[in-house]
Structure formats: structure tokens, C-alpha cells
Length: 367
Image 1 (cartoon, one colour):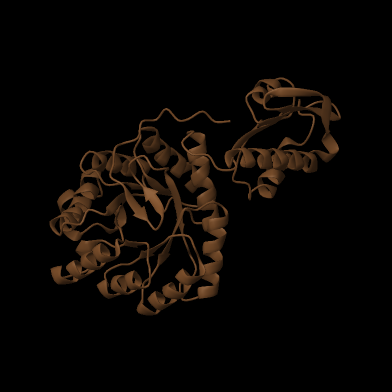
Image 2 (tube, helix red, strand yellow; image 1 turned 180 degrees about the vertical axis):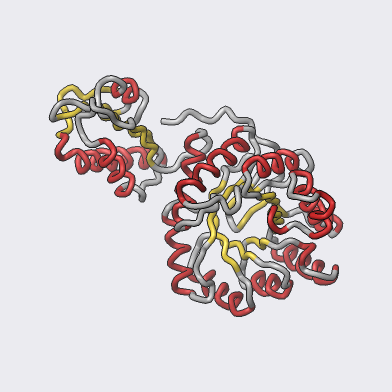
């Protein structure tokens, strides 16, 4: 099993998105965003539920029109996971989704016009105890800030963020979190590092528009991993041009890799070589797909030979070390000398063993 992380988290205030706590040492949350047409209620609900099944803590939904706000109301009634309403410019949409039960508003106060409109949204958020996320993006900085800095810089992103923060603070509203996203890793990391020294509110992490599944996952792992390892970040989204379900999976993989938060199986597997006694890659891929529903954290090592296999198995919940025709089985670091796994039927046998162990651990956690 994992040891607890030794990372010291940045101190921050605590907010709640629905029933999910964020900041002040609460577990780092993983969220995603639907990419369906919000007005297609059936498709959007289906995607929200799919995201919830793979562990998403929070889901964001774009609400660009008043018709989408009406759809949001119906979607909200069909799901239990907290929903963030993503709104740009139109304060009336913010008021409407707040009325319909939005758990958080993603809206930049400086972009919704006259101070009376901003005050109306803030007063509504106060009355309903709805937090706000200020979301700064390197691709949409204010014109005067673009002209001042010439190009997106960490100072430019943070100046934009602090401009919106001041509006909220001047209205005595402190129930918010902030993001300063960029597609460039260094720019995003430096922006978050700078912002972390200026405010106490929670920070929402992301490398925006990171790219496709493979390249975007790599970028996100590097950028978010750097920040998280420094204790910066209270909630995150991995932004991929891919199925949003993959964003949640990658998000949890990043947290598991840093031993910050565990969910489900952490597979330890060798890259394979000519020493392998069974199809390691095929076995791992099949088990990852079959066991996506498990949420109990455990380490499972699947090593194709006896060179590194025993060492990994000793520190895993379940471990396999490749052998000729049959492979060695370890449970909780102990080798079961009288029980071996048939290489020809390994996937089914391992799934049974892992599910049985997960049931035991789950029961123990609830006693």
C-alpha cells in the first residue's frame, strides 16, 4: 500500500463546492468538464454519470445561453455530483443557474459589465453560499494587460487574476478559488507559483488546452506534478482533447504517482523483454479495463520474470512474478508457495484475486 505523502501543502482557506471541501488540507479534488451540447440533456447527463463512475469529484458544465441554463436545471435534478456552471459575460445566466442549484460559478467578475451587475451576482452567491472560480487563461488576457506585457507572462496572468480578486474582496466576498492556466508548462507553473504567494484562497490547477491523450497527459503530469510536489494546488483538471473520462483517470494517476491521493488499483508493471514468461502488456491492459470500477486503493505488481518480480511483489498488495507455465503469487508481501497462477489463464485468475482482496480491504475500511 502507499505511504502517506511527505509533501507539505500550501496553507489556504476552505471552501465547499456542494458537499466537497476544497483547500485547507482537504483531499485534492479531481474534476472534468462535459463536452456535450448542454441543451442535449440526455447526452450531458450520461457523460456526467460516466465521469462520476470513474471517480470525478466535481463536474463543470458550460452554460453559454439562457436555453442552456434551463437545460442545466434539468441536468442538476438527475445527478448527485456537484456541478460547476461555466459562464462568460452574461450575468443573467449566472443568476439563473444559481437559482437552479449550481454548486459553483466559474465566472470572471470583471467580464460581466457594470458594478451593479457584478454586485447582483455576488449578493446571489452570498445568499446561496455558492463559491466562485476566477479562471484566468493566457489566451484571453485583457487588452490592456496584453499591451503592457507584450506577451503572456506569469506577471501578466497574475495581474489579471488579482484584478478580479480585488473586485470580489471589495464586495467582501472571499468564497472563491482561482486558476491561472496556460498551455505552456513553464508559464503555467511560474504563474501558479507567483499567485500562491499573493492570496490565501484555494488554487485550481490545470495546463489548459494541453493536447491529445498522450501529449496532453505528459504535459499535465509534468506541470501539475511540479506544482503538487511543491504543495501548490487544491483541485485540478487535466485538459485533454479526448474523452473527458480520460481526464479523470489521468488526474488520479498523477495524484497516485505522487502518493497524494489513492483511488483504485496502482499497477506496477515491467516494460517487458525477452525474459518475460507471459504477456505482461496484454495482461495489464486487460486488467486496467476490467477493474476500473474498483475504488479501494491497492498496489498490484505484474512482472514478467523473477529478476525484479519478487522485490516488487514484497511491497505490493498482490504481486505476480513470471515463471515457466505458471507464475509466483504474492499476497501482502508473502509468497504463497502452494499456489501458482497458470499463465494461460492469468487475467481471469488475477481479476478474481484482486476483487476478493478489494472486498476484504473495503470491509476493513468500514469497520
